[in-house]
Length: 116
Image (tube, rainbow, N blue to C red; front, side):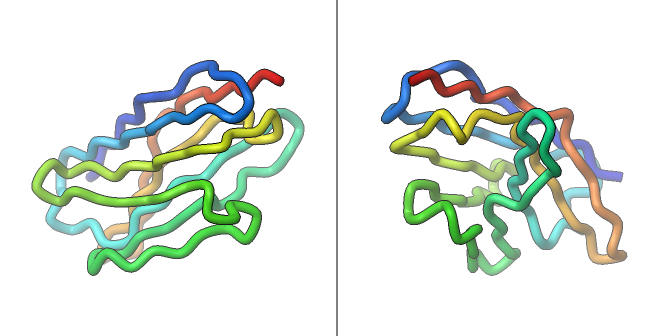
């Protein structure tokens, strides 16, 4: 089992920045791919960015260079640095982790609100 706890959400004005963190605990040695997702009100959850155990990352096309995902395996933490935030980035942001057996674990989410 893997437990994930997100933090760092909040309310900022458009153009601002936030750094989200996701701390993993439990069977962390089994974790491979980690990712950030988001779900806006009335919309489906979508992938924001993913990073594998080798540090290779990919992003949703709409990120357009504004976000950076990274992981610190020594701290069992994955980060999402977000800049040039827009009102349409308002959503609950979730962290996920895949283990080597193919199970997917989710955090509880952290709210990000961007005002214009």
